[in-house]
Amino acid sequence: MVIGLDFDNTIASYKSLFQEVCLDIDLIDETWNGTKKELRELIRQTPNGEKTWMRIQGKVYGEFMHRADLIYGVAIFLIKCKTRNIPVYIVSHKTKYGHFDEKKIPLREEALNWMDKKNLFNKEYSPINKEDVFFTSSREEKVEKIDKLGCTYFIDDLIEVFEEPKFPKDVDKILFSSDKENQKNGLKVFDNWTDINEFILDGYSNKDLISFANLLGIRNPKSVTPVEGRGNSQVYKVRTSNKEYAMKLYPDTSLDSRPRLETEFRALEFLQSKGVKNIPKPEAKNLILNAGLYSWIDGNKISNISLKEILECVSFVKKLKDIKTLDSHDLNYASEACLSGKTLINQINMRLEKLDLVSKSEPALEEFLNKFFSPLLDQIKKEFLPLWPLNSLDKDLEKEYLIPSPSDFGIHNTIRDKENNIIFIDFDYFGWDDPVKLASDFYWHPAMNLKIELKEFWLSSLKDMFKDTDSFFENRLNAAIPLYALRWILIILNEFIPKDQKRRQHAKSSQEYNWEQIKHFQLNKAIDLTSSLKKYIT
Image (cartoon, rainbow, N blue to C red; front, side, top):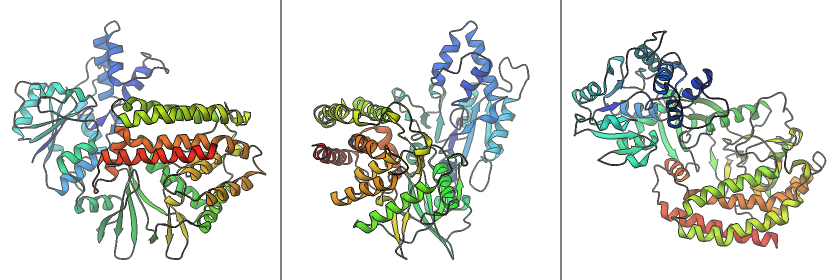
């Protein structure tokens, strides 16, 4: 096996850079929003548009090349090629200088410098040397080089390369594109590198995982073994001669753009600095791998939830409430924070719209949404939204009433350690949020299936906790709870959305994944929660 890679827009991402350059030279204003393709068409329609676009390309690939990003998954792909002794070459159609570039910046040299800074020539994990990079002056020359190198696979973002008359017939063609209409004539089309990894190189070998651990600072671990992962991430136990760690591989950022690694690592550092101890210790992170290393918690999941666990969760929320450093620490808002009634309704509507788009090809889902969910949504908005306190109905709740929140908080995200302490895990949605969201999510979370008496104890405990510092907490909670149930029903149905399903599938790469079976299971869960909600509001 010999693998060839294109460079621009296949390895190096200029996703936002083209827009930034056009903004710098006043070709668009700050309100413009669109894809690179849409931007190119917009510029080309202007006087001398073709020349203008070529000039912009010269700036992006030259003067501003250092601002380009390494596309997520490329580094992992190179590690896997290295551990398998697979040769990799980069073949790029790139002129020596940018068109109409008065500064005469050498594009090829800038590209090589960028590759070096991104560690593409790092022998520790990449099979590529500088001598394995080839720049050509034409597309025809590029195709000839691919043939001479004996590539068995070639990955490119331009279909025109594969349509060249002399493109070698025995090379497997992989188009890196979101345009599935190009899936023709023997072309494989992928819009992310995680899928390319799995298609060419399958899953992770033990050598791959050891390389990941090495890059996180654990030299020559004794073993790296998979453990049951979370809904979105893969988790591995890393053992050294005297210590154990949890290595967490976060979702492909092309499928989920939220900075989960940065959020969780920073959250744990922040909480530990405030004296919170019953959480994992952050040890190391690697942004290129999108991986984090944490202290290993030796213990078990909690299967039987009793009043003891609810009290421990209440105690943890009290610790969060007591952290009053809103102005002294630069924490972001939690993922999908809900700071007003209007925001919550908007989030419900946005989730419903996404599911409506796919429901036309999913009869059971369409029937559920039209016959059960939508009428219930209308009823609850009519009955409960008027109960929402006016100070946070249409405008955000004031910061003094927010708490730092794990967002996805519950006993499903805990471990009971060997000393019988409860340890809270999974903080990749962490940030400032309304405690009403935390209270409501805990109440309805389908992963816990709490008994009604425990649910009610939970709510009464939080009402008592916040009554002296937030006089509207109870009223806001009473109005919000049924709305959060609706939100949870839609979250359960995320498996019907291909992009969300793909993220889940990647997280469970070592397990059998039957999409049809999972969709059926999730729809039944949504129906069950709908029944619980109806009982709550009647």
